[in-house]
Length: 372
Image (cartoon, rainbow, N blue to C red; front, side, top):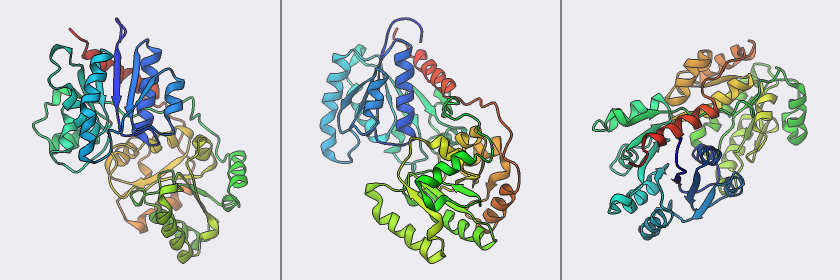
């Protein structure tokens, strides 16, 4: 965005973990490096220090709590926009978007420009429709754009911008396969991951939507075929997911694979986890808007097997169609995993969807909405 320094506010529920949160930090960083002022409004979270470390600002407001009391934050947002002379507001989640939209209404000539991002395939509703209200609407995949046009046909297609989430290729360099040093490090941290057989990796939060049960059934089937396979699921162990984690341990025990599974907290060394693995799984039970782990794994040089729907299917067909499996076909999942474990990993690719490309494209959208 050439020209005058601008003040950009991003709105989201919290800054704990997840793709929306990562994108928020990445854009804040790009804004600061481009000489602009970046403000994030959320309830806070463990990523706030990373945000402020890049020179952005954080304002704590609990704008993601689904309660009628949350409406009290509308005047506070309006005062913020006026006081800081905000040029543009970018909403990344539904309730924060409703609050931001209400705050902007009635501001007249002082009103900031309005951008929304559709990060998920939320159930179509009037509530979800707020994410199509932006003067520009960023869609994180072609899958999302198609979804918006299907369920919100009154949306002007000219204001939609498809910007895929970007991979920081410096943080995910191509790694040799097998990477025995990375595997040894993983096994040192988590002894269940030892052995000479293949390591399956399922990154993701501890929720049923991520398909951990499908991964456990797959692991049991591979071991029944004589493979000394192990499963690592970084991110699945979270303080507020103890009950779900207990269900996974119970299923693993029923399948007789408890000694070969590691459910662990989120890791800041996810690139090393990819390097340690032989096959990355993306088994979300519900179609995802994007599927960043697919790109990260492929850039690292690892094969990916995933259910062929949503943004994950879109990316697999583009970069490694061998791994696209019809949703919930467990038999074909096993067959595909065996075939890919016996085949060499994908060749190094020149990834067009880099972090820098995503940042530049997003700032270009902001530049389309310069004040007159």
